[in-house]
Amino acid sequence: MDIKNLSLNPNYNILVTGGAGFIGSNLCEAILKNGNSVRCLDNYATGKPENIAPLLENPSFEFIEGDIRNAEDCLKACKGMDYVLHQAALGSVPRSINDPFTSNEVNVSGFLNMLIAARDAGVKRFVYAASSSTYGDSKNMPKVEDIIGKPLSPYAITKYVNELYADVFAKTYGMETIGLRYFNVFGRKQDPNGAYAAVIPKFVMHLMKHESPTINGDGSFSRDFTYIDNVIEMNVRSITGKNPDAVNTVYNVAYGERTSLNELVELLKEYLGEYDSKISNVEIVYGPERKGDVPHSLASIDKAKSLLGYSPSYDIKRGLKQAVDWYWKNLQ
Ligand code: NAD
Image (cartoon, rainbow, N blue to C red; front, side, top):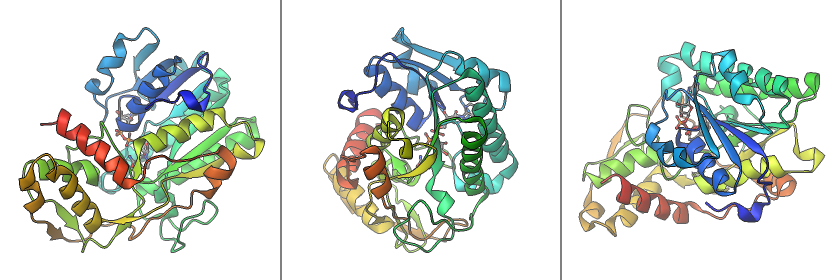
């Protein structure tokens, strides 16, 4: 994605934690293309060397292999940085249900290490990946930032605790923080493999192999699927945002429309069917509902629009076409 029109000063040094992962590597790539120096901190827990391999040739890119659970690694990574885009975490609700302890260690203790390191290194602003899972059991629709429910998984707790810590660090140490509550992000480089793969890359891989994707539940559950380039836009706007009211708060990062899983599979079959017509005839299988899943998720993006000028360019159809094209070319 080209972020030239977002007026990010190319002299800023930017740290992306979790930069070998799906969202982080896309952020590193876009920001490097803008001319900034980018440092990436990652321990390859779920990220992959191939996500950053092409970036390593760029002299403005620096990779630190390290763990956010280690305070020294965090300090080393934050030193000399103007902004932090903190993406490193263990994602996935089911992963946190299977191993809540490790999710907490990385997502809470690691987050706290990063906040302390960013404070001590004097970074200008700490922008971090929050999550729509913080809405928990709230029935409110669309989701507005101020109204949340009770968390439905250990993962959701960790992401909510991040927001609480960021708020307290802003109040007690005068830090600038912005939390971005991502809603089901998808796009190039998202990992289709493993037990905790996200639904879109997982379904794409099954369909490409003519295997039936399994929908958990009856397919009526819906999500505000958000294309990666909209997420990049919000991260950059979180750095460049000048309005004092825009800082020390959280934003929904979404497109603002919801799509059911049944509709999603039909779109994927249609778009992949343009590359291989047999895919249009693959049957769908239905399985039991998953624990911790919220039935519906739809964001209000009014706050991001009014305070940060967010103007997402990719709806689900435009984003899915791009993602399908990438998977077809890269994962055959
Ligand atoms: P990802 O798994 O692809 O990326 C996470 C990265 O963090 C990986 O590269 C991983 O190796 C790294 N990491 C994990 N533990 C680490 C540790 N202890 N030290 C250093 N690095 C570590 O996931 P993603 O989808 O790119 O998610 C990025 C962020 O966005 C995460 O904080 C996630 O919770 C959040 N988020 C993602 C989504 C989504 O839909 N993808 C939705 C809501 C929130």
